[in-house]
Image 1 (cartoon, one colour):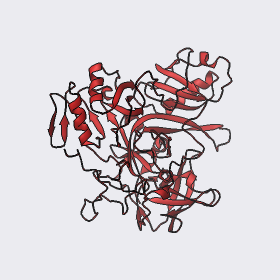
Image 2 (cartoon, helix red, strand yellow):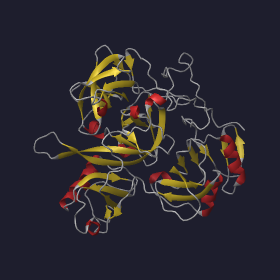
Image 3 (cartoon, one colour):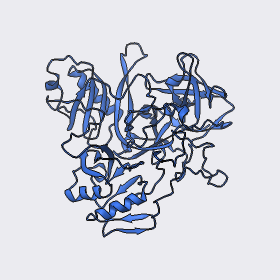
Image 4 (cartoon, helix red, strand yellow):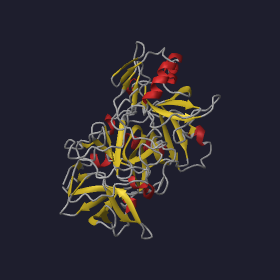
Length: 481
């Protein structure tokens, strides 16, 4: 039986494709062919798979199945792998983010029937947890029945729910009400999260990070020695469960290198006088070594200056020369500033160069010019997010959380400032996201840019993405040169 969509490493020649730009070289995290055994193919723009009654029918590239189908559905899915990006069933466990519920026995059996070896289905909203004795071949679906899918290898028997990034301890103190727009499943603004910080500080807590995860908060605190801390920390904040911790599991001092770019195929081609989001750039790090990163987007400041975003840790303060694609290439600009420790930096491009608003297309995924900076308030848990780097090509995940973190302040009399970030769930399909992907623009399904990629946890699940929300509120606009 034929696969749902062609998933090969073939590239459509630019001269035969649409006007959308394609890379001169196809990035791959491994040096082997994308079709080699054990090498996951990247799910590009794959149609949703709609499973609804009655019976099991295959028509073209669409498969439908009823809840009662078990072995037959499993056999068919085994033949039509790779799985689609999203599997839509005749029931929704998330209902567009307005509510959440556990699957019924029949619904759980339907989901298990689609995946050979799946022995358990559970929910830890907004995640659908599927457990396998042996995990299926990748790539895995990112969404199933409205929830972000989380694949886990474990033997049948008693087990605990995985806690995203470590929730910490639940507060047992009085409920807290903050005068801000905070609700379940609708992302709060930076101002709303700052209001949470302000109220916690009046209660003598010292938060350094406040994370919103849809139905609960995780607050990282400095004051680990406060007596009876768990009894004092609020049980709920505006109706959302409150958790606190003292460690920082998702923020190392520097970006995680999960694999050396030299081991894979990187797009180190020269792109001439017109550059665009997603090209390879190079700088010098401490010690004089070269560090490769990815170019972001061009933003116009309220004063009218046009600058290109990039990863701050890729360039030495005081030098800041930016090369493309490597130090052996052309100097294309200078880093002229950054935002605290957020890793967002700005480079001034040489006057002879142009910079587009559109990144590179992939097979079955046509990139469009970016429309502008996106509003996080319009996002919903589970919405698709994307980034494209010269090391991994296109990577696709789902929006999972937003937070604010405390940054040192350069202004006299102000002890610190706060900056927002987003967290994406990438479904464990990309354990080999490379260090050079730092700085790549992150966008949503509407081609609105939300921020930039910083790093992914070692499990290949969650990506940390500094947000452009503050820049948007300050009047920065996405433009081209």
